[in-house]
Amino acid sequence: MAVAFPNTIETERLLLRRYRWSDIDDLMEYAVLKEWSRYIRAPYPYSRVNAQEFLADRVGLSRQDQTVWCLEYKGKMIGDVGFAWHTKNGAGEIAYGISPPYWKQGLMTEACLSALNTVFGVDEKLNRIFAAIDARNKGSIQVAGKLGMQREGLLRKNRFHKGEFVDDAWYAILRADWMALST
Image (cartoon, rainbow, N blue to C red; front, side, top):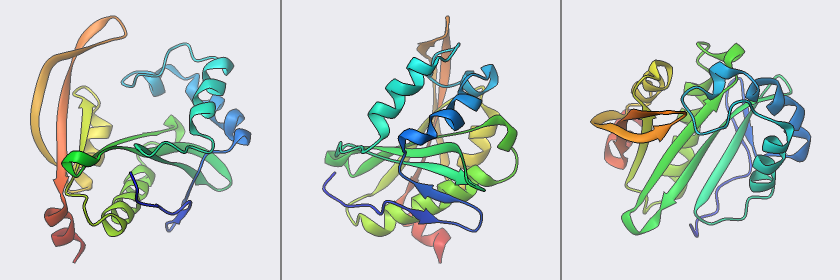
């Protein structure tokens, strides 16, 4: 993506920023928790080598097809929100995750709202943001709803995940819908 997004975004309670190597200990605090990895592609059990490989891909991310901000709360890195860009289609896929001790506090919604506001504000060619969410992940589905995303469908037994085929719920928001919500 040729668009330059800011390195940091400040919200009421969070600093969204780029990953640093020094985030490894904070990452390991929650990435080793089974409930954190239940619905996402991260391996379980999660090792320090997994964390190093993850950070190697995220620190200084220069790929034009991705944008990722980690969430810093009270000086601690607690999760992230990122986008994979599909520029030919004017679309982006949002993905987000947060450490379990910070669930149900509105922090992920706060982070995603600011991230969406930023990407729609900076990239005028961006028409749509979508999310593919494990249909069992009620918390993530709630966040998508709070972002104004509409459920567009269910892909039954869409992917093989940790030993079983799982359904993916697809959610999306169009630029026009986002702009209407933001005014």
